[in-house]
Image 1: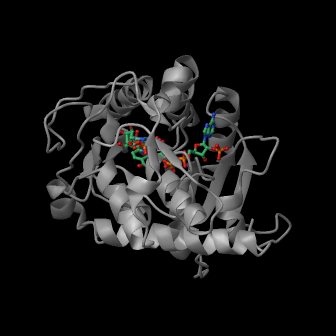
Image 2: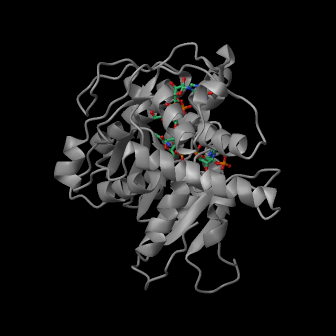
Length: 342
Ligand code: NAP
Ligand code: GDD
């Protein structure tokens, strides 16, 4: 994991929900490297949930610390009110969510509460605190459902999961608070982005982790669902820079963030097994339990507006992404076998 330099403070405070997630960890590194003080909301868990930020964790007793973790929950409006009032952030990044699409079919009400209503609780906390604070909402390409590709900021939404429906609520309420109350509130409509820190039940990481385990003889088969679905996959570390850029614009607006390339799950599988010198057909089986009640067939983003207005463009290619994830998992699995892993 990369280390972070601590340049002089820039006088800005950022508050992040979802700081323990993939994007939260990369965004925290980025903001710390820019001199921000970062406050992160974590939820109570019976096991450790801070693995992705352990390398930048700072002793709570250090007087000059830049990273502060606070217990709270997107289901608990009173905790959000108190945290926003106490921290008085200049920028809030709302990355917290029940973010798994398949799981949202099993827990639709919970997903609506956290991924949908969590956003209004946070926006109300800002409004009630009467502070001027910029707000970033983690919107998603899942909103497009089966709308024709390529999708851009003008493409109509077609939510096809409880997760997407909850994100649609958050998208529109963020836009409404911008229009109704003049808040600097933006939606980043991010297409799939992956990394070695991706949760292990999302398809890319599930595949790269399996490749590493199979290579080491620790796993025999990989069970997957729909191999024909197509996604626009980019590298998460680059995507958090786009979030920050959106909040530095003179005016609030919504932006698509994507690579502009789409690949099937099968293409990802082929590339990942191929990189390890394995023939994927020898190991991959289909298990219908991973099919979704309603699927999103093809996502392909057009990020022209982000390139023009934010100066942001995806750099890491599909094959580089697959390679860096496979190599990271190979390394991690090797450490685990040697008893040095987490
Ligand atoms: P992730 O790794 O699943 O992280 C989700 C974060 O939300 C975790 O820190 C999690 O905490 C936190 N969280 C869950 N329930 C919460 C609750 N009740 N209260 C407070 N925090 C809660 O997701 P990600 O990939 O980093 O994505 C970040 C955001 O972008 C999410 O909103 C996601 O829906 C959205 N998004 C992601 C992508 C993508 O491709 N990655 C694309 C578009 C949009 P624990 O660690 O305790 O579980
Ligand atoms: N998770 C998973 N597991 N997906 C599988 C599997 C499997 O075993 N087999 C096939 N797939 C297919 C899914 O059906 C889907 O079409 C595709 O792989 C990608 O699934 P995920 O990696 O779970 O991601 P997602 O596209 O559903 O959702 C992610 O991207 C969204 C942005 O478009 C999440 O990060 C969401 O939070 C995010 O909003």
